[in-house]
Image 1 (cartoon, rainbow, N blue to C red):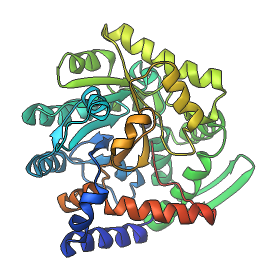
Image 2: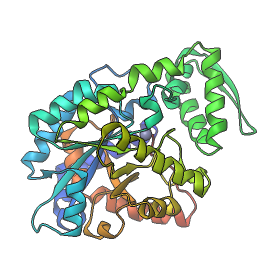
Image 3: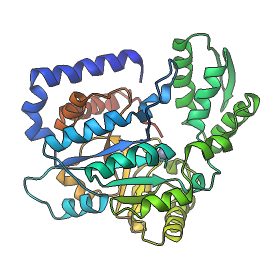
Image 4: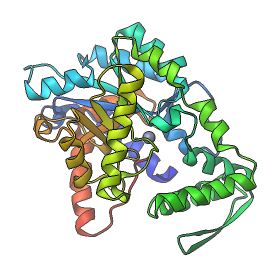
Length: 361
Ligand SMILES: [Zn+2]
């Protein structure tokens, strides 16, 4: 998402907040609650060039957001409880479930103590190969390559990219342009391209994974907490929609089986890597249902409504986006008016074939 459209969206959210219009429409738009989506949680300052900043919030914001939601009267529930309430509604209660993708180590350091302080249940979705230290956080590594370089010449699936990288603006433009093209090609090829870039720039993907992602021992420590649910996020953190049906099913079932084996308890919840319409579709939602997953979450934007009781393996989420770390934005988003507007806009866009993907890992 560009800085310009960020500014426009922030203005819209602020206008909905200060005008009271968001709250006015809330009884029709806010549904029964939301599944909040987080990735990294740490206090590190944001760099001038850091497109992945949208995947990172500060511990201060997380704490403030939880307090704000408690003041608004929301119940914080586990994914098991969210499912139970969808299947057997609790009249008059609205609820939130907190989820974190990718099992970043900073979740343990910064987020879990906040969840414990407020008694907030949470779910961490782990890509199991990453817990073995063999994962590729290629979206972060690609950002690092562009931060280092002053230009880039790249062939991505036959399309040539030749971009200057002298300024932050040029680096941002190149990142968004090339990132989204990498997401459309075969993921094995995309990762090979990024791996070769890393090799040329002395970036060690294995060391980066071991440094940023938790080990099995750390996940086991968290899993012992009654507030914690550990869900699966495939083995290799791959876009299931790009795989054959057999391979997609294997990614799902093997990741669940590995978590159950390592933790000694059932694993009932799943998150689709990347989670947007490029990465997971109706076939994958069917696979998750067929193998008996209790819930599966996407990165598609939206609140939880009662009708989601019949689509428990394709649940939308509300991203706690690093660019929107203000309680008033969260309040307006939870009131739901922006999603209703977004739904109308995306229906119009899809009719005009203008849909632009904005979700991330
Ligand atoms: Zn992920």
